[in-house]
Length: 291
Image (cartoon, rainbow, N blue to C red; front, side, top):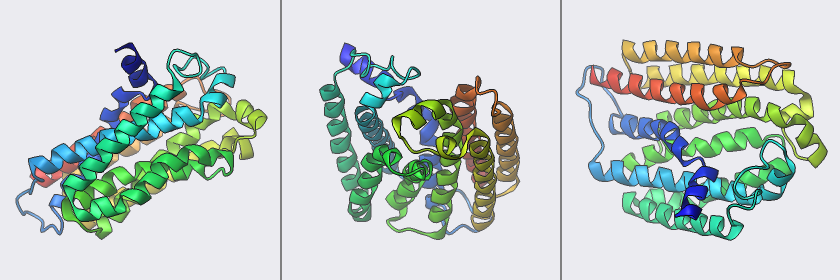
């Protein structure tokens, strides 16, 4: 039990609840596509909800476990991360890989239970889920590769419901890609000195913190535009647009929390605000479909 508790700590399992809303967003919108304004809301089946939830949790567990295993030597040398369970010696790397393998098995079963296309697309998803952890070693585009990996959640949920890829699924994938990349740019500003010393590639280390924060703002502005395009394409009502305005306000607040010379509130911006953004857009979409 102690090893399990340490593993859940190292993969921040409690934050799965902040990643789930975008998967559920893809699932809910897919069940209502193509949509006629005023039509009654359609719901995915309980089986789809169950297997999508399981797939999401398993994919996140797999990706985080591989990430922590791959970065264990870097984490041990970085003062900010040295106390994590693996580099501090409290959690075995072998145990971590065991849990990653378990996540892979569960994810495969969930994809198999959903539909043939979901299972066929799984190898490509696995390439991102496992491979993104190594991209920082050779490219500063790693922020967007991470974003594309997280963007699999709503796109994959869409495919799980409709067994095909439609235009809104691409908008969701792009929106989440830019959203995640934007706040990963902010988060990476904490490790500029270490990344440069260790030879790791990241936008803040390569171009400076000020440039990274400007690029994060651009990513989040584009995220809002893509979410607006999604609202038009899905013919969503006023509640969605109100939720999008709240998201804009949250983005503004997030970027006011950080500055090139003050990164003391990065964790609030990274964990808290982005959790609220995910919940607001999901709840706003659900209400817009309902009303």
